[in-house]
Amino acid sequence: MQQIIFFFIRNKNFLLFAVLFTISVALTIQTHNYHNNKFISSANYVTGGVYSYKNSITDYFSLGKENEQLLQENLMLRKKLDQFKEVVVFEKLDSTLLPNKYEYFTARVINNNYSKTKNQLTLDKGRKDSIKIDLGVISSKGIVGIVSDVSENYATVQSILNTKSRINAKLKKSSHFGSLIWNTKDPNVAQLIDIPRLAKLEKGDTVVTGGRSTIFPEGIFIGTVKDFHLDNDDNYYYVNIDLFNDMTSLEQVYLIENKEAQEIIELEKRMEDEEQ
Amino acid sequence: MKNNDVVINIVRFIALVFLQVLMLNNINLAGYINPYLYIFFILMYPLDGNKGLLIFLSFLLGLSIDIFEDSGGVHAAACAFIAYIRPVVLKYSFGVSYEYNSIKIKKADPMERLTYISSLVFMHHFVMFSLEIFSVKHIPLLLKSTLFSGIFTIVLVVCTLILFNRKST
Image (cartoon, rainbow over all chains, first blue to last red; front, side, top):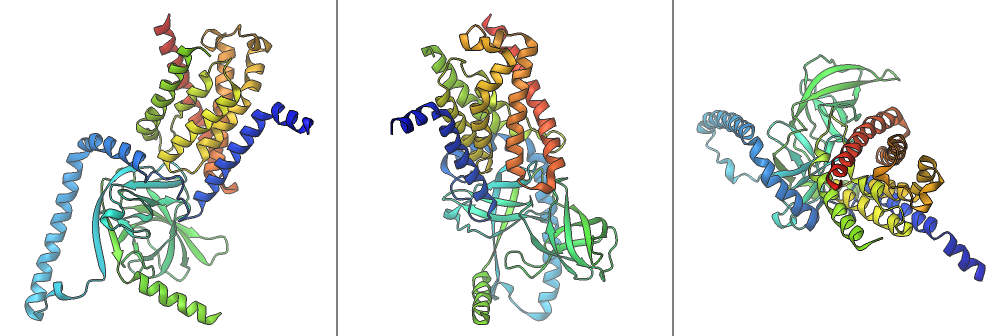
């Protein structure tokens, strides 16, 4: 007995180190599972507060660029509205009465990283503003990521610049589907994999989100084809994509809620259960 | 540890965490190179201080960075590791004499000091990046990040040392 106690006293530093190291490795592994990063997250009161304070200062530096971007978007929306008016005159349909499948929210990015392999963003909206896990996040230029965690006032987003991220995407031209991933090399270039060899690819082709996910609506812009080559087994293309979004400077983003997502997921789950 | 040391170390802990998360994490030189100056706290922890306490404080330091960075426990693990290994590194960089308190890190021979700083910095970065990247496929990326971020950190640590040394004399 005495020897055991002596052993503990002699090795107390090592034991302390071993315990703490194990805890931190466990925390690390836990964050590697999507949706389970609940313990350690920047969407909490203190860190969210610090980040929004910092953001209230740094915001001023990018006001010019931000204004320019909003103007561009207004212009685009105005054009669309004009086109729409012409159509509506003939059809006499009030679109606001139609049930709308998607709901949009706005938020500000208060923390953004892009230099790691698993990048996250923090937004200044949370559960209070009816933000939920799994909402899609886009900016006026294109796709940004998916909400991975929410607290009362803040939300964290798994950026598309994250090795865990896998988003359904397609070629705008030919509607061939693939998955959008990131190989960690360049924050402005993402990769599209699993595009069948049959697809006709060209440099400069536009890539948009596919309609197969319950998170993003179809046709949100992602980027253009930079270059491509066949995979090792020669059946699929590996495509490098220049992102429309500059992921290194994000300010205003939109969150998209698909109100029918729950229904689709439940239905698909029921099918799977029946098959078993 | 003297009373004065306790105050200095508490202030240093808090100041370094804020400096790290508000400024240094946003440098992103060439897209991915960031200095991790916050381990300055572990490097400069008094030589005669309690070793168990250092391991625990380093873990807390790393964990606070992790909470801000959303990175799980990678900084905490790396910090606990270098805090544990620090006595060994001290012994081989300064010789046995450090045990008799005859050495002060700020006044030691520059070469010995550099060995001490760079060994700990590289160990920290290696553990941190391997946990963060966590895949065998990206070993070149791991080595590249460790090397470049490590050099950046060492330069900053040495600059900080020079800066604060001048003030005290």
